[in-house]
Image 1: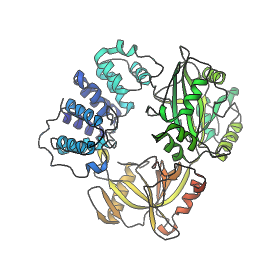
Image 2: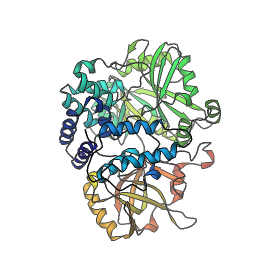
Image 3: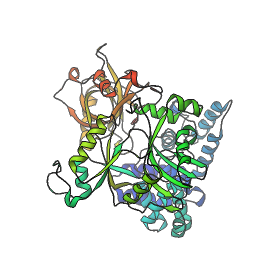
Image 4: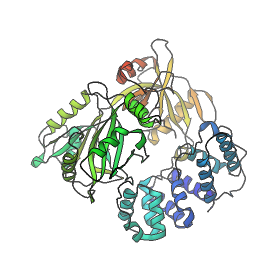
Length: 541
């Protein structure tokens, strides 16, 4: 199969808002993919590389060769080329990687060049996530969707499941089971704006969701502290321990304290779910990137541990001594976790009182934590999905910032001005400095309005960005602020999304760097590692 088939399908998927149409387009391509190209094709369509990053960044892609006029590159060729890039290391590898990159891109058409560059830097956004990819795999293979979903959660790999389904059908999918030491896609939580509304959604309470009355029929739920750290999945088989992140990256060698904890448990084989975080003296959490810098570092583990020790909080157990617990209710899994690791269980309460749940939320937020996760005690572990049995609640922080520039949209947003650059005024200099960017939260109507508005404010442009007069104020919701070396203000927004444009405010009335820094906390208390991690959502269209 030529790469252009994948590119054209990707563009068609990005251009439609219909989920059914996306599934049909993907299924049609997968159904005619060769046996040898299933894994690569599925990876490419999902916006990922089969073997992870290959050492190619933005700098290598600034100057592209003249594109080819006809598509000739096959998916198999690109897959082999990526494998060769990933294997390059040592002296001279940078030059070899650059030469190999130019050699392939010289054979690519303009559309293929754009696709490959976005794929290489992780900015291919086309709507082909698991929510549509797994149904497409099921349709292409003619198998039950629930079977595909379960196989995906247990294998931790959509391309692997696509290969099994397309080559072996239902029998091959049924053979995929949870294996200790093989990462499982984690269960995720949906969001709710308030604790009361989360409780209402879980137990079907009637009346005003803001009411703090007791829950109907004394239905109890678990309310767990939501730690702002790194999600970890811990596997132990005898003396062997594997620790992976939410994205299933292996970080075992960087977290010796978690390895020690796992080996000390009174079990032989276990799979645990939890969160690792760096704490200040007294127990308050360090800013997120302190933890991120520790888990992302590759130095001497003992030195890293001494410099920035991590605490792990466990909140679930998926397998215990030969017994898979995924389908057991949370109440059973919590009891087993409490039995084997009582000193590492995450702070929580079990309650049937909305008032008690709210008081617990207020307490953990006051202690510097991110919020809570409200969990139904009768639900199984919905691995790889945002299960309705887990609902996260976090306080929302809003700021009025100034738009400094805006980027040209791509995919479905092609032809619009989409990703906005956000600035806050430095009260010491009076200058507006960039603190982040986002395209999250924009409706079609907002995109149309801002394209017109920012065209009117344009002062300069290039192929990627339109510079604008710093006049338009926008209200932004964020989860928090962290240290960043990327922006001149030294801070960056976490998970920024647009709420509305403020025509009632001038740029002089917008929030300042000091306002954001107050949310960030005292920089002197951050400890080591600050500045090593960048903003959590470097958004790009």
